[in-house]
Image 1: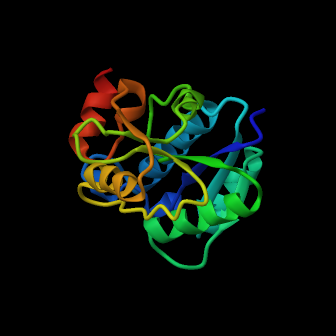
Image 2 (image 1 turned 90 degrees about the vertical axis):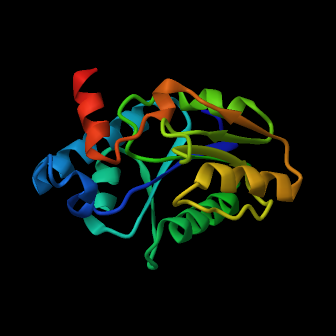
Length: 188
């Protein structure tokens, strides 16, 4: 096990997940889909230390049942949860964190993302999101998840003067956010 790198998976409530898919899937179907995709991300982490950051008791219990460590946060919001998660992992002695979103149905070999010494920014299949981001801890990296996060995270690496690489990997870049993503996923 690599003791200097951790995988951080932010997960919100399974029951509230993927609301944009509500025209295609029921609430319980979205919950099951989210859990299956999150399991794929966990499985793709190999021997790395895996942590889920969440504000939901059910998600925390689910993660523990998968032998995954949990960082429970009290404040809502993806960027806040990730900041708190990375801070916790830095205090635990990790020098690098792979932030991998839980909605990656094809995730594979997250360890390869950590091979680069600086920041690795994985671009989503639509060209604007960041489904996977690898950062060194202790640099004060500011997270900007939301619209155009890929460009924002690239600018942040530049602002900090950190070496970075941009990566498009079909298995890590495909995330399920919209009904058309689900249709594409179901046909492949």
